Amino acid sequence: MTRRIERFCAEVYSFYQKHGRKTLPWRLNTKPWGVLVSEFMLQQTQIDRVIPYWQRWLERWPLPEDLCGAPLEDALCEWNGLGYNRRGRALWECASRICGEYGGKVPKNPSELIGLPGIGPYSAGAIACFAYNVPSVFIETNIRAAVLHFFFAGVEDVRDEEIAGVLDKALNRENPRLWYWALMDYGAYIKKITPNPNRRSAHYARQSPFEGSFRQRRSLVLRMLLDKGPADAARLQRSTGIEGAEFFRVCAALEKDMLLECKDGLYQIASGGRNKSRQLAQR
Image (tube, rainbow, N blue to C red; front, side):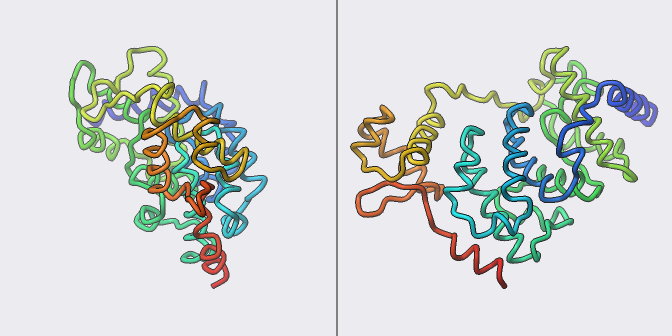
């Protein structure tokens, strides 16, 4: 196994040296807040779409304290078009928590990061690694594809626990940041030249199409409110083409996610949390 690990590492580094995406803006600038923002935006979203959003976000809110206290509506306007608006709200909330609990500094320890809104095991490990060069084992789609391709050819229903065991042995603990950059780029390349290895993962789930989906209807309602401002149910139904029970189901889901609220018969972008955020930042 040791020799296979060595061959694997050599192949990954060789690929990165020749073809690595070394000029991605969050690789050229590894300041913790920028890294954290990139990880939120890159979830289930292609890199080329993320880059202009990331650049605009950092121009407007270069530090957590700049976002802390801003209205949720402003954050969602900047996020609009990336999809999965819950991530935009979670990032907005994350800035408040960082200001209130960590003095405006992104935590370094994955165990602290995982307690922040919108951050799970992968994101916690990735942020700690790419921002602070902290070594840990974490898995996302390109990492999984690279390991499945090299170590589990032809094997079905491979569990992440097996992949994590390989990653622990291969991890460069002196420079994990460079290792994971290389590994992700190698995995992305493998997915382009072979049938997606992730289909052989026990955790594989195909994403449903966006067109015609409940996600799209949620997005339509939010976009209309962001563009036109508060509206009653009748106007929103006319402007979005979502009618009857389905319209109210969409609104209920958005309210549950604290993205939307209804006041005096008008639907609007949720406002709760702005004053609390400001108070936390000033403690």
